[in-house]
Each structure stands twice: as structure tokens, then as C-alpha cells.
Length: 498
Image 1 (cartoon, rainbow, N blue to C red):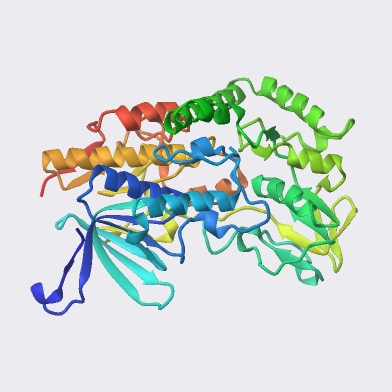
Image 2: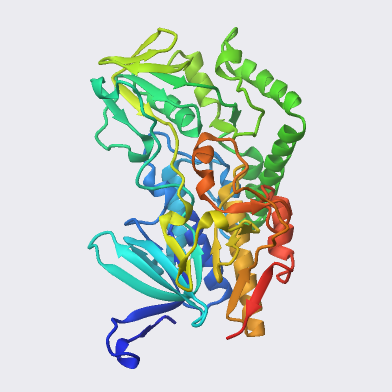
């Protein structure tokens, strides 16, 4: 159980400091999953979750734009331990949020969450074998301090308070409304209005057909295309298995099938890019109007899966294009005007509403400062161990999901590994564990991914290494072996007793 150490017991001067065995940062999809794994494996271990916002859900509570949904299937985005029971495989944001909240409530996890606690600093003491964590109360401004034996960051990798918007010439002249999907205003009325969505990624392709249902017309303005493919919103095999098998078995089989298909598609794209380009084009020719300019609007300069593939459920974007509800324009912005946007080609796009679906700002570990024995850690000088711990930082783990598959596939594996690591420490009387960097391993960027939001910020992140266990694999099945079943002891991991 958590307990409080008071000043009277030591110096007589300090305010009470609460101690927990494990402190989790973030009450989103990863944080709730981490709490489940922890209490399932260690019922007597105390833990708390610090969440900077006022509610559970993370990404799925923050984003409120029309049509918000997963671009991964829910049989892999869902937790391994809680079968997804929804009818749709590609689920809407509110359904995913309800799934996360229900999970937290069913297992009593919600009782251990401290809302509006933004972690600003965490310092490790080797002498004491514990973390001291300072959090700012976002509602009152006061600082709260806790201590913990183990720290786990489940805060994702992007900034929650602002998205990325480029500097657009003439933006201040525009007479309409400009919104970013990350801060979607509740009072935005776009019914019967002309909408321009700037962007070509998952958010833009979600917004366009969703807004087209009410807008006069939607134009998706992109500098360059993205690979976009259609996927059924419902998984017929999954629904069939559920009718004939126990729910957990049906879920596990569907999860395995979908993870296998996603991995196979990724490997095909990496090894046979020209073949996959041709196959994607053949599918798009079926979905789009005859004679549509696929070369201009749907053929990127890069190979498939050099950036993330965009999925559209039941071809909703392609249907909206066929119905002349959505237009795609591939061009560069010259300037905003009072009534819209003038493009480099000279074309003018008239708009009442402009949505800047231009991406995210990355932020490692929610922006908190990590320190070890009084020295602040420069993240760029650390190397990620198994994609989940940092060299030279004891008793610390983090969750960063896959870029080529569902986030939760990796999150579940990280949580399982952390539990195995804690059990090993318990069995052997260790109080500290830390990966120690191998000087012979060459540095590589943390995320080997060509997306703009990654390229803008990856230099501020830890490095990955050129070989295991420092290499950040984007392969669920290899991680499945290494993290769920692999050895805890290796040459990189060091342990200490009190």
C-alpha cells in the first residue's frame, strides 16, 4: 500500500511526501494498460497514475474533430487482456474512449489516478534507490511531490497543448475561420460552408468525408500525396468467430490474424516496393472515378510504408470523391487572401473554414526533465534499450508504440517485460536496474520514419543503436519473442542491491 513519510520522522521540516512502489505517468491507452498489468502481476504493490489533463483517455479524449477514429483495427489496438466487443473493427473515437474508461473502471484503476498533475521533473537517487517526482497541479498551480521505486512514462510522444501549424503567408488577412484538429472548437459551424483542409495524412483523410456530409464542399489541399487504401469497417471473420467461439479465443485469433496481415503488408512494402505500388494503384483505380488523375493526387514520391499508410473505412474518402463532395488539390500555398487561398499555380480556393491538419509536435516524455543523482539527463546522449528503457537511467521504462502497426501491440509487450523485470528484481533482492550503453554500438535516429512530424523533432529524442538490444524494432513478432519470452539477463542490463 502507498504510505506517507512525514517530516517529523526525519528532519521535522519537510511537508509529507507520499511514496508508491510504481508511478505511472499518463492515463491514456498505455497508462491504463500498464496499471492493469502491474496490479494483475503484483496485487500488493502500490501505484499511482499522474495525468496532466482532467480525464482518462489521452489521445482519445483530447481529439474531438468530426469523424475521429482509429486507423488501426481494434483487435490489435485493444488490450490483449480485454477483448474488443464492438461491431466495427475500425472504431470511432468515442467508442475507443469508452473502451479505455470501462477498462479502468472494471479493474478499479480509476481510483488510483491523480488528475491535473503534470509531471515537470523526476530525479533518481542511487543512494536511496528511488525517484522523487515533482508535479504541477494544473488547476491550482501548486507543486506536488511523490517518491517511487520505479517510474513508467506512458505519455506518448507528442505535445498535448498544441499541434503543428506552419507559417502561412497572409494568414492574418483571411476573413474566415482557421482551426487545428488538435484544438477543435465546439462552436464551429461548417454546415453549408466551403471547407479547405490542409494536409494529406490520417487526420485529413478522416476529416474530409466526415465534414462533407454537412459542408457545401470540402477541398483537401496537399503539397504531396499519401498512400491511401480502403479497409472494411467491420471484420467479417472476427464477427463470425465470435458467434461460434468463446469471446477471448475469438479475440485472440483475430488479433493474431490482424497482426500477421499488418506485418506481412509492411514486409512486402519494404522488400517489393514496386510490386506494392502497382497493387495499391490497381485498387485505387477501382475505388476512384474512371480517368481520375491518380499520378498527381495519390502517387507519393516515396515508397509504401516509408511513411504510414492511411486507411479509410469502407472507402469513405473515395466515395466522397466519386460523389463530388470532396476534391483533392495537389499544390503549394502562395498566400492566404480575404476569401481563401491562392496557390503557386495561380488557382484560387475559396473557403469559409480552413482546417490545418498539418501534423503534431513531438515531445519526449511529456516534456518532463529527468535527472540522476543531481545531474539533468540530456536525452540526446542516451540510447534506447529494447525501445523501452534509457541507458544510464535506473528503474525507468517508457511506452512508444509501433509506427507500422497498432500502438497497443507494443504497449502490452513493454508492460509484460516490465513486470518480468520487477519479478526478477524481487526474486534476487535487487533494488536497481539500468541498461548501460555499449560504446561499440553506433547511434541511429530513434524513429527511422520519414514522416514530417518525426523529421522535425527526432533530433531531440534519445538515439537507438545499430544492433540488439539497442535497436528499435518495428516488428511485433520479433518483439513478442524478445519481450514476452526473452532473457532478462544480458550484457547490457545491470542490477544492484541496496
